[in-house]
Image (cartoon, rainbow, N blue to C red; front, side):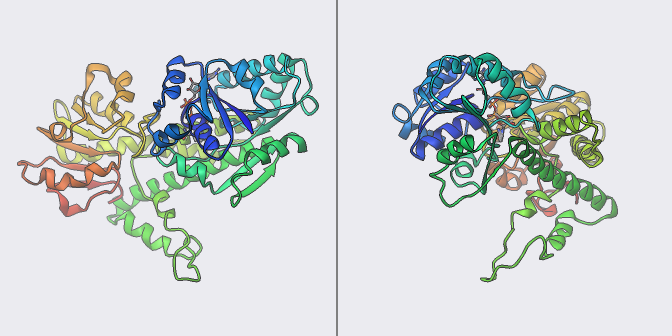
Length: 443
Ligand SMILES: NC(=O)c1ccc[n+]([C@@H]2O[C@H](COP(=O)([O-])OP(=O)(O)OC[C@H]3O[C@@H](n4cnc5c(N)ncnc54)[C@H](O)[C@@H]3O)[C@@H](O)[C@H]2O)c1
């Protein structure tokens, strides 16, 4: 099947490369000409394990990039829309979605073959049918459900493991305005033979994505709240959550004695708060959309509130050891929102660094691949260092924000340092006795 994918970010490029690997012919479209050139030269514009190999295998044959949306839509039978959907302070920002819908509609005006337009971006419930569909009809002068199809196919991949997540997903949700649309979507996902597939309406598909992200975000804020109470009452939240996790409702025992859900624990571990390009903006967009529709979400409001306080909690832990942070040299380890990605969008490192700078600290930040992402936020006000040893030299305080594997040796690196800087461990990577002075979230 010939597919066009509009937007070549984390979702668009990964989807395009994986669909090519599954046997489709894919053209990726982007308005950023550098991205288009990079992709056609086999250079991934984003960091994602396995992507360079997939591109090396398929670019030039079943995977190509272009800035020419018209040609890509004309040559394909389905288009995936995978552009960004940021949160603009009071609601979801659909400007990129609207622009692409109009552009595709203009092409459909001149296209005789039946074409299916599928929204893959995360959009608030109703967007596909109430925003995208009318724009397609207006720009094409044609009728959805007659001349072309419209679908919604939320993406659940996680950055850092995006390729395995796309190639072997837990489920594929397909929302379509009619049977003919769903048939084309089924054909697109036919190579994913053993995967659970669900067909539904576009609106339900949109809500499934928000609900999944909101539930995971709720677990994290819940764990952070429990973590803060745990440290206040003098117990360790990791031990608490391990005890809770032994409940078989969370962690059923399989026939072979194995456990069904060991990874559940990663979502109930207290930390510096959730970040990334999805959870914060998606929870906020759902809250705002719910309110606009007359439904006032209390739990999700609190999820955001708890999350926004957590970076402050990290800085307070450092102040408990160092006192006034003015002119203190503080090294922040990690600015990517999680290991395995260069994405810093909404990373908790950003508010943590901002609080440190505001408190007068002299901040050095280390990250193996993501430093460029935060330079626009902090400019010359902090030091950026890709070398862990020099980043740690002279530090009077250390904060662990991202679980990069290279930080595992931190106890050895600081072993001979005197006086040893206090370590605030936002990810519970270390034990209390690994350092002279240690503070862990929820400990
Ligand atoms: N990043 C994730 O982990 C993830 C996971 C699941 C869902 N999503 C959702 O997928 C969508 C895309 O997210 P992302 O992180 O891949 O975004 P991104 O910002 O990495 O990429 C968006 C791309 O779209 C391009 N673009 C913008 N306007 C365009 C236009 N008119 N024509 C062609 N290209 C255009 C941009 O140049 C950019 O390359 C969002 O709705 C997001 O919420 C993201």
